[in-house]
Image (cartoon, rainbow, N blue to C red; front, side, top):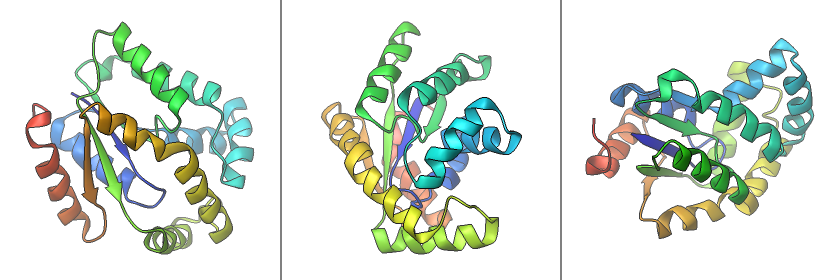
Length: 191
């Protein structure tokens, strides 16, 4: 069972990835969490990533690819995984495709969380206040939304063309959103 969650910043990808991964007994792999851990630990990757993150820009593909491919090679992903934050660009889609093909697999489902820009800005500003996240200022959030529209939203068409995409309204109570996702992916995955 191999899935990914895609959507704009603040759509609830992290929350829903953890819930859905828990439901199916697979690891949720969040590139954002991995980057933030590296930043807080002051690792070389973290120092490189911090500059991009503070500007609301994507961490370059080569850094992101290396990190994610290393994570996907770990034993706990043998029975599947749920990716949150990867792929974010068309070249990253190719990298993931190649990695999965080498393992003799492919994605089973892609969940697109849909939320309006004003909704996600409000969510992220609240999260920044609660969690003290320096990468969640309004200017950075709006930049991240624009970067998402330009670089990541095109992936929606790629996965729709492959018949993998399910779109889910991400606005509302998190429990309701989880139920919408489980209903949408229904028979696509074995759980």
